[in-house]
Image (cartoon, rainbow over all chains, first blue to last red; front, side, top):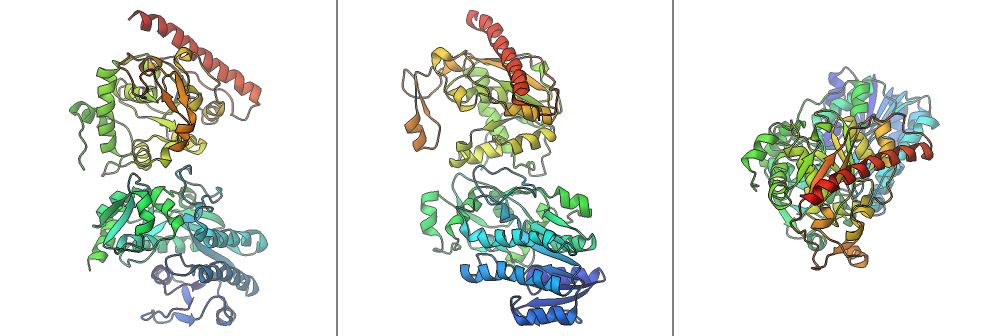
Length: 306
Length: 267
């Protein structure tokens, strides 16, 4: 199958590309970043997914399937740009899928969709609405993109659409939201809170995405790896040092003394857990993770040390 | 940080049937070492301070899902702690009773951390259903905060029961083990509840005792477990049907309290 991957130059995008090729698929990519060292035979259209060039890629390549993973988090882009990429980009990709006869589309979203709040349950299932947007408006564009991608299921019934809500990834690449949070010299945590964090090895995620493609998955699915761990355990096993800060002090310290810069609403995400139930995806695809919580953290730890 | 754990608790923990990983963490983040410390301190209260006695523990299933349903007794949830302790110290193999706690607790630093690491989760139907479907032991006080707010003179009365627990028990086919709890009112004789002060820290109220502080006296406590009630139905029945079943549970709790009271007051 010919598969077009948006966001292919990202770390997980590259892994998906390799996994697709290993599975016998032909891969083309769209990304505004270059991928030096891309495997031979992988054509990369260097352009923004909302621009003309991306549509040209669809027209020229005529892919059978599209994996859309060109979304950005609050850590890498300012809000206006982010809103345009995440929501505008998702719309552009699905419109192109319909126009150029793509048969299968996979939107790779995030488990933070469900939001973090004091009274939100552990192990969210796919039917649950997002929570906590009022305290974390920065998440709105990812939530909107996720829900918008889901509308393709009834708007374009001819396309098999899968919306994947995936947990944080960790691994040798040191990229991703959780990695960035853990990477600093000191990891700030809020005194008196130790929420569960759910993560999976980035290679496992790449395999899961390819499995979703091969299983012609349709619908909305949570994608999970090993069991969640408390933040304190993750920090310790990653070989990092926590910095325990009382909440009132926390806000004023962010972005100083080498601490990461976080939007205010992100505080709930380090006070309360976002834990999702990935059993439906596992049942449908037969997916099992190959890296457990310890080997994933060990790989991340080794990468941090180099 | 190493938390002190008594050898007895350590031995019982080893027989606790929870799916811990090699670090002693279960999929909900329940932490074996925290449980060790919790049960060591609960044990001191259970055995020495409140000299708690448990009757009818054989009614609690050794394995599989069950719901402990009882009355609230006392201004702070020492009743819940002693029920949890009784399931750990008296059941064989020991079981972890998981309470459905008030929402405010998870907002308070340290309380949030301790409750979530010892399996005492926010009282949400999603949590209850999931835990029961995984064959865990749930502890429910259908009186909720209305129940802990009972004053000393009302200590043996039951206030209005919520009906959610019954629908959940029916939907998940969970046997209900009723229990009557005695002594919480004596340990913390509440004469008034300060609601406005409570709201300042996010709690529903702060209980006031004749000696002002909400600190429990070393009153004796007893928990009487009754025969399990098997729920019949789907949980989608009309309110009237559910209410009848709830009242039946309420009645058996009242009987357990009345029966226990004779011996308790004679002791």
